[in-house]
View 1 (cartoon, rainbow, N blue to C red):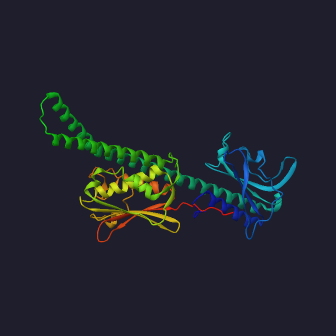
View 2 (view 1 turned 180 degrees about the horizontal axis):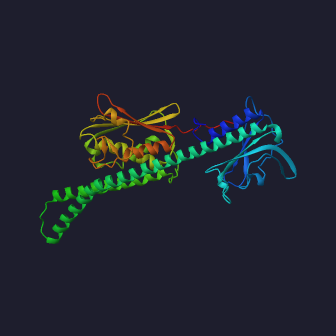
View 3 (view 1 turned 90 degrees about the vertical axis):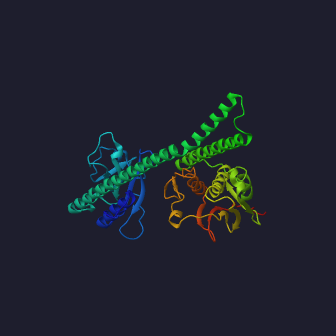
Length: 392
């Protein structure tokens, strides 16, 4: 029992030992989804396959599943028919029956035999097996509770990281937008042209760039929250990966004009069943990532390929690349290649994390590798759409 990690393994250990002790099959009754009835879930034997157990109740008699049942051997009568067996109740908590609390009963182990098949010593041993199993169940549930507490603590840490990252990275573009807008408003109120046309255009472009980044950040944050929380349902349609890439390039960072971008299409149709909006966002994030972390004049190549039942789309650049130790964590939320929380390049470290969530939600994957001679290659792999038709 000390080696058992969950309820299924614990029940298996108890039932197997009881089967060895009695030499008879043992049936495990456990509560259904609503917890109203105890239904047979599995049959255990000491060796070999389980024999048919026609003499057992198809559903645990109500007086056996009631919280007041104390688990003594008896001949159970249910629906006018007799079902013979030794019924041992398995409970949680302190081992005492809680009146009106059916959740204290985990289930019932039924030894398929006449009540007198066990000697007094064997019956005492059977009770001890169940008692030790109940302690193991309590231990397993305590471990589950600790794991849940650890997950909650991690979520709280992620929430704190999010607030710290957002407060730091959103403040800079908001300050820039506010400052540039104030300068333009002051110039308009004076009635004199203090700023030349080129300066005004530069300030307006800065406002637009900051606003676009803020919008993209909020979209990424909302999308990854819904995906990881299970609140977003995919609306999949049959799409060509080439069309997805073409649409994505209409929404990438305008700074792409400073780079040499090339698309290498596939010779055969690269069809995928995807949520087009999310997949476009995935490609946009990858291209924007390449634009942000490579110097002007760098080359960005988007390649599409079909290999068997998989469709791949890769975004490669010849920038400085990503250190090997960072490639393992680059898809984590709030992590960037500067070895910590995002605090530069106006990035809260959500773009690549969202890319992974979108790929996984579609049954695919995403990986990063080093490019030759330098740079990075991000590769999305998705299941190819099955468009075969049965021929009459």
